[in-house]
Image (cartoon, rainbow over all chains, first blue to last red; front, side, top):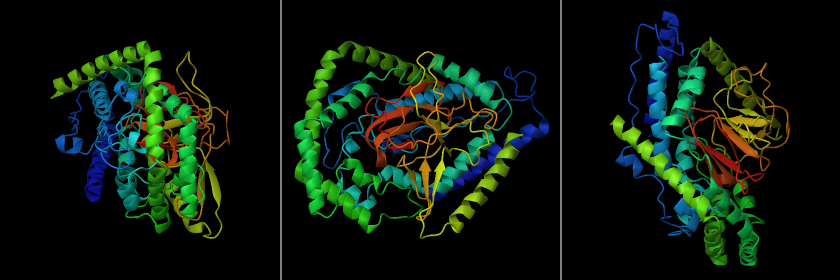
Length: 317
Length: 172
């Protein structure tokens, strides 16, 4: 996978650079109107994520680990990963067509090709830190999705170079920012113009962290960690120690795996995940009652946004 | 032409990075303070960056112009990282004055300059048309999170649980 991605990125970079050189050599004017260029860029249809890739996306309910089956009430008001991917890709289709009309090349890597860590902003699987012992044993504190993506530094560097080469043409930024982004905003819409559900979920996490049962559970987890030889007082204490970029082929060290697996085991012993989840469930039901109108309005806005996005994607097929 | 400048800058920066890595004494944990994690050099037109900002956005303009960290990478710790196990790169907010950093739309000013990015951000502005970014409350992409879509011209405040509690960010 990694090698294939590097090769694909290298080919794409070569194509982008060739296009840029061609443009410069010909002196083709990239005016906002695009008139008088005497030629047309041939747009490559953006390859959208297929069923095989979609099968790798995070699911709405956590599938394994201590958070298995958990889903908090506010998630009913949040955009899921597939929704965000569809909106982003629809916006890219509009921007790509717009840039082509203005005689500029824009070939973004479609959203969804590198799966997200979380299904939505609730980040249920890692909301209370790592919760999956099998993942902790295999990858330490790094999510499997980040192992794939962050390890692939060569492909990432090539992709960034390709993007730089593609957008290096005079007038590219002006066309994108002044014409094509506004066009996508108008035709598809803007993601997270408001984020009532996300803001409330954030408040829920903070407020419940101060509740006695949750504080007791965190204290229990911390004591358990001390018994296992790890002096940590907060969830971030544990994870932060090993939060460093993984190099290609690098496996987590024994110290990281030991801390990560003990972290999950102690969360199980202290029932930290279950206790916090229960507290947030109660808290979020109350939030929904007191913010029903704003949440329903946001949900209606998101429904329309998705309808427009899927119409764009359907028309493109 | 920008491509030429970028290519030269990339090569120069790559050489500088290699020099830094090889020159770093393994025993001393030399720390460098960085606010440009986006482009290879400070003058290579950081126009397509995800900006993590020190202050909240303006509610009238929906823009953020305080000191920022500009990035195009996933970082599992907003404090920084060690590229080689010996030295450490610490992320700080900094200014991108328009004359020195030509091209960045609505440059970042000096408010918050030198302050560490970890747990000190109030808003973010994605100016990268090629990727979205997610900010997480904790390191290792854990905790509550907020997604910043591909460049759409709008800065967004971090939600209350993330404001002054940003632990990591991921490009996608």
